[in-house]
Length: 109
Image 1 (cartoon, helix red, strand yellow):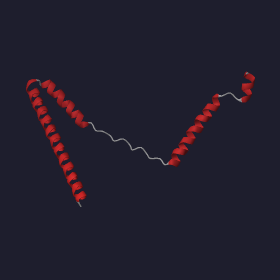
Image 2 (cartoon, helix red, strand yellow; image 1 turned 180 degrees about the vertical axis):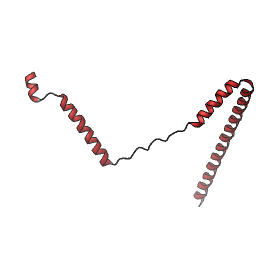
Image 3 (spheres, helix red, strand yellow; image 1 turned 30 degrees about the vertical axis):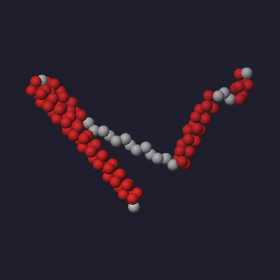
Image 4 (tube, one colour; image 1 turned 90 degrees about the vertical axis):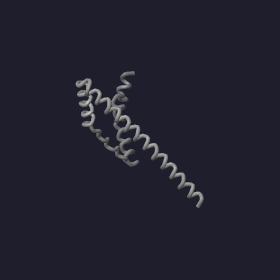
């Protein structure tokens, strides 16, 4: 019972630490966003062209989307062995085709 209580207490402490870290990270992001907004407002008042370029870049960035990679198929051991054998056979034939035949070797030597 005491061990279970210690484990629960430890899990609670870890959960609280994670919540505090997330809260600090969120606050930092909000602070950065506020700074960026202030800089944009300042740019809008002082340099209209730079403001338009930055806005255009932000809009382009929002328009982009990331495509997920297709998952790599998991092959069974049998399929892997079949593929390996076929590749080995293919390259084995390629090696044999580059070697001269026995008759040609005798003529050459």
